[in-house]
Figure 1 (cartoon, rainbow, N blue to C red):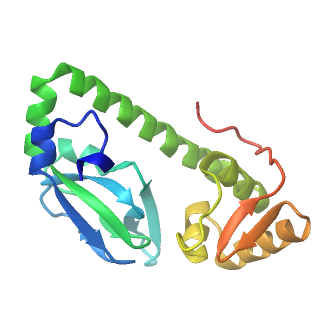
Figure 2 (tube, one colour; figure 1 turned 90 degrees about the vertical axis):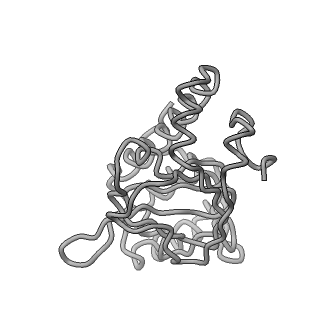
Length: 205
């Protein structure tokens, strides 16, 4: 398991961590549960969601391969969101108490962990920027430039539409238009950019 985790994690902390497999839509934790772990995504995708008054979901955080998830929870007693897998996902659960001890006793680890959190924050800011873009096709372009191709067998288009803040029908129509213009190629459920796209909003640096 240690080979798939960030190299800066102390061996003692890795030994206390556990690996969990989730199926699509399986819950990792529920809002209000006591915080005992933060999480690292080995493969797949996790969503932190809150539910609006009309029953729809608002995605508060999205973490993919090689990203930490629910990092802010280590500073609060209870989770403020539900968490579920957007696709089949492998997760490492890192115990919060042991993590806090390691951060307070190992300055090098604390700096490396802070750097990782900063990188994760940049990705979250990129997502916020994308939602500010008005045209659907520009949101798709922005995603493909900043996140890379949509892998086949990964995120379903309905979930991708939610990530982009679009209705599924709007996304389907937009992809058809971009494919017809030769800007993207669709293969086995994946979306691959063919031409270099320039998003209206730049990726966060």
